[in-house]
Length: 94
Image 1: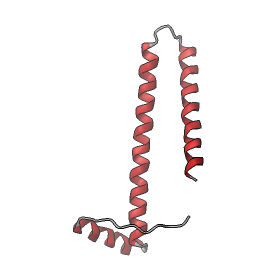
Image 2: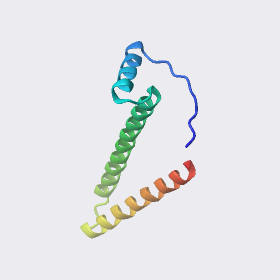
Image 3: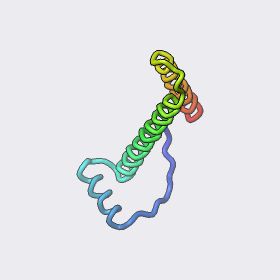
Image 4: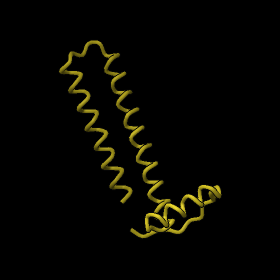
C-alpha cells in the first residue's frame, strides 16, 4: 500500500517519546505513529461493536414475546448483518 505524506503537530513531549520509541524498537517515527493510530482505531472499533451488541440486547429485552430460541435466532441474524456490513465497508475501502 502506498504511503501518503502528511503533517501533524505534536506536543514536544509526545514527539520526544515517539523518537525514543522509534530508536528503541528500530523503527521509523512514521511506523511508531502509524502503529499507535491503528491501535487506537481498533480500540474504537471494538467499543462500537460492544455498543451495537448492547443495543441489540436492549431491543431483545423489550420484545417480551420472544422465547429463548427466537431471541437467539434474532441475535444471530444481527451478527450476520454486522459482518456483511463490515465486509462491504472493507471492500469499499480497498
